[in-house]
Length: 193
Image (cartoon, rainbow, N blue to C red; front, side, top):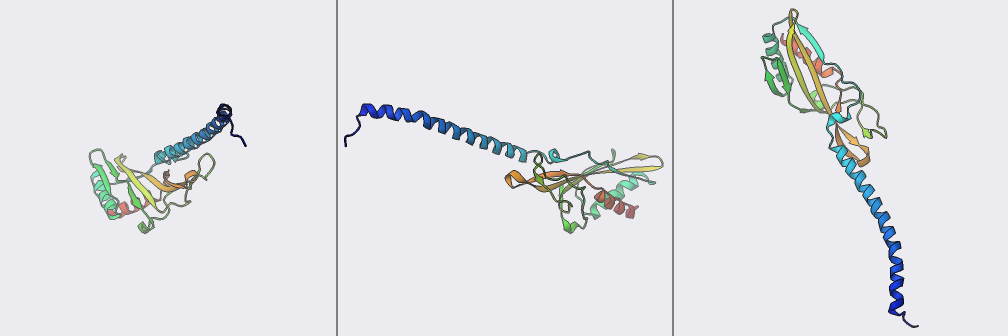
């Protein structure tokens, strides 16, 4: 069999090159689409937990005590200490107490602290627990004047380690308080007043 002349082989190779380039371009586009989706999912994982909260935030829990602000302040600090709630910022003059973002679990004995989460969906592919018995929490507590006493206002912030389904990856998601932790604190405060 005779070998093909070099002059005939070069055009033959050149005719194959465009088909290979078209295939490479299609593969590159698919790879770029996968990379873009992966980057989008990574960006989603970097969103703050509050980005996943759904619906209106519940109102803070309030209670008025027929005691002086100074007496309620001291009793509140004792209550937080007794419940092992770590305090971050206090300002007696303004009546503000912020607690640290701290972890809690079933050993705290607090029970379920959150409202029911939204169901996982195509638009929100996050799997969450129905009852929140472990996660992170912080509180913002304000004492102010009320007619005949002192008003205590408590807001609780909760985070849950949920699962972002497209990447089968953990993600921190804000949950709304069901008022249970606020009531536990008020009951403890009642015992010191």
